[in-house]
Length: 324
Length: 300
Image (cartoon, rainbow over all chains, first blue to last red; front, side, top):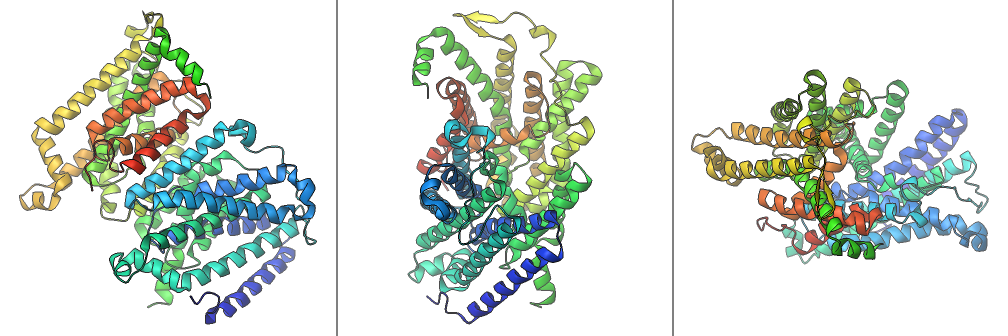
């Protein structure tokens, strides 16, 4: 595998650093807490959407239960930081909480994925949906642990680590974007690796890789697990941002959100989903500031993308100006 | 978990009968909605995610007719027919454009319609809960007591109405020319077109029938509870469960699955009040793992 050895790895790292530094500078140029909040959310939701796009865009699997892993990451982080372990770990709490969140969603994705990938098409979608709603029901039922329909209330401490205090807006902003950019660079390596091309081949013509001795099912499972673990990371960042976790994050409508982002941004360009997250957040911010009828506007926008543009914005731009 | 509560319920005739009757009521109302969903999927191959929004529309339409005329039967029938006509427009204007599109495109199109309709009803009827259309006067009589179980007569009426609809649906699908054409469209639409049948009309008709059923379910639900924007968002998931368990496209399967889910909800509320929904999803997961084509679906 050419993982981490491709020519564009250095370019990606360079671009990542440039974008990160630019956004740090931007924090001071535009001192608006509202705009900083939008940028953080674009990265968090962008990670969520990009992770789902591994399955949808590159593998052609319409997973409809992806929020299960987002919620698993969020609840794991919240419960971890609410527990007494924090007193023992001290300044290591946050990094270990995030790693635990990723770990739990990875294990969950391995379990759910191993069962779901046996099914095809709509049956796969329904089984992922069923698992997600089962987890939603469990969250609601375990009132003593999860707070039931109220969500994980009461907040949790965020002990500083390595001089980073996530209680401070700048530290949180810089940290979230940093983690997101690293994840995106690694994801790019994965997508451009032979493994990533294997996924596209399974999507386009499953018989061919199978005939070449590929283990399609194993590839699908690995992709499902990676997608779940990144969704878990996104969920843990969201929980850190909101200092809590809510059952709606495990509800089926939450799984529709990254689908919108993928649709708006484009599923066939690597950065499409994060662009979709940007459109989604801007729309959210702009529309809710002006009208109560957010759903109406979002619905009309999605409808016009589905029937009009027929692809995401970034896909459309790339076709129009780049891949003539 | 209160397994003992379930045990106590099963050995007590009053509890057993009232829970069974309650389960039947929930199940049959669910069947009305889910049968439309499975019919549309079986013939058109489209997962109509917006089916729950049509159900909600049925509730609002019947509420409006009730507010104007005060006639219960008229309200329910107008609600159902109104949604049927709305469904026809929906199919002609939007759904028929995505018949051959990706599953993702179909889901997103339907979801955008849910978002739009949820807000439109709020704009038209306000975002407060509307009190339902209530029970018609004929049924405003004391409940029946069977072994001390309290059974409202109107619930029996709902079960009977749904059973009649199920029977009619079965007759339409098996005994009429339209039913034959519908089944043929599901199997081989190209051949049907070659034989000079306009399958677009059949498809529009099926979608209209499916919408009518959703509207009827919504109108009857409006008599049992309140009417509110977003009320379709849980019934759609339950209808998916029924569709999957029964076998996608199978109306007979949907009938059995509806009763299973109705009973699971009714008795689940006794045994595990906090995990009633979870039981349904557990059944759905188990069916998809062990028999993905469902109880009565055709093997792929």
